[in-house]
Image (cartoon, rainbow, N blue to C red; front, side):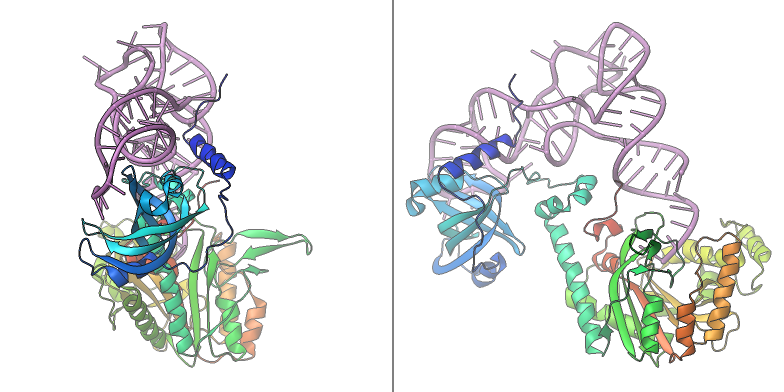
Length: 483
RNA sequence: GCCCCCGUAGCUCAACAGGCUAGAGCGGCGGCCUUUUAAGCCGAGGGUUGUGAGUUCGAGUCUCACCGGGGGCACCA
């Protein structure tokens, strides 16, 4: 019985024919390629029908083809955009022409040609010579509707990038955002550093970690949930201004704003406090947005709105969380009175956090700093200089999501030790998202850490805000999927 | 982890209330065409309807389980 004829079998057959004809379907190199955007930039001003003798070498993927017997139009796509090619049998010769027209959508070719504008006014390259650079053995996604199935888009991002121009452009923006951030911090005297991803003890954030195992050492290691503690040890060491831009891993649920691995920027600046950190963040984000071109209705020009946590919750819910500080029952009663949903069995600080994330965070569209948090929620932040029970911490929100978190860093080793003890007590009460006691870190603080501002900025979320995407999966190339 | 929705050709979608051999466009294949642009025209192909059970004379359609995805909740950033 004959094998069923698969659509892609034709491509295999063509591959064999090419080899038989002495064509290498996978040559090694094609030097001297220019981006097609360069051709557009140089000649978009031509009149319809106008010819030039300007020659270009371009390369890319065949995105569309319109044959006309002894001539054909081929759309060539590279990273910078698309360019129409015009192939003519009388220029290329019968054999070369037939072979070019016989290629498939998705095949990669290199082309030499001269720029002209077609009668219909589209800038084109008249092909004078061409070479196959790689045969495509699978059909690309449909050219008109594009690739829409989100599962395929995320699992096979390469197809998404081929089929959807705006997706490719978004990830180019993401790359430029990261490059711009590095330049910004480098210019201000920050040193980019790398600290361990595999850690004997995790810390610096409240989250459950991923656990892995080192065979030779026969011990468990954790994937970092933050870079905080190591970076502060570098401040103790005298590096003064450091930043690290890399992946953190948190063993929590997946949602439109949570991916288990995500890109985080943390920077630490000696002799500065959280107000300095806020000013640097708004300057950085405004600078990056200007550099990459931000879309949408956000006003990112500094200064951004600043409000205290207490005011923010009061404004949205009418509840003064500091009226009965630490009194969970009173707070539960107040929320019930106003008909607000809240888990009444939670301890007071978690209730405050819930009020913030449920009733305040989603409403914060324009960039907003929320200042001064209860100490229980912030084991690494320094006590507020004038508000007892609070710490000098802010979180920054935009487009209804949190994008950054910062403190005046706690540098009193005895106080830090007491905070770890408090965390240990919470662990014993069943809280799985507490800080393990990190003696090496406290010991480092005992050597003396200068007053320091620390800021953590979620890069994925920043890109979401700058590009108006509502799902983190749209800004992560290969988001976490089952299996 | 829980609830709701979804899964048909390489891609985008059809298929009345359970009823003939599961259709169409794009792509691919053969042919015609020297300025088209979702090119056009002619022709012939392409399917284990996510997987597995079940109900029924008959299942893409109904039931159950499983796999995968989306949205929401919970948890978090």
